[in-house]
Length: 151
Image (cartoon, rainbow, N blue to C red; front, side, top):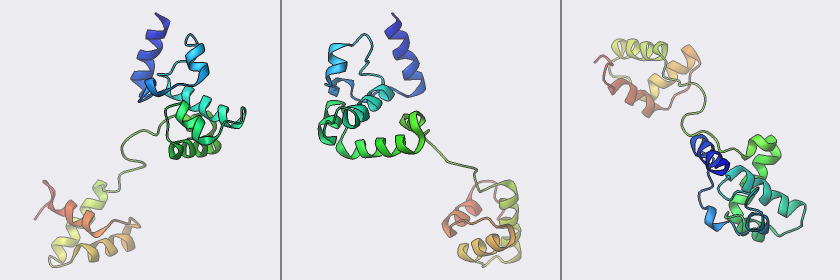
């Protein structure tokens, strides 16, 4: 029952291994009561440990834990940079603040009313000079075409 609760918790956190059936490492086969092939973080850690401590080749360690060689190197770099936290997947979606704030949109709409023929690139340059916000010209053009943007 505890295993099912663990699996539900990992699923809710987005931390289930995508291919637990591909995990063939001895520890996971011989001791399933502790080593859970569905636990992505545990599998990643054990993959790194098998290479770094037990001396398995990168290719063998990755394959035994259901990962590719390229994925092994990504996991290793993330672990080196952030420790155990690096073994967690990054959250999907945007990173950092959204640049199209109300202030930025108001600035762009005012400039468009003043200079209706200005290109997206020109408006993007003006925006960067005035507010220090850098946007691609296409982002500016899309923002000015969006519903709610005045014409």
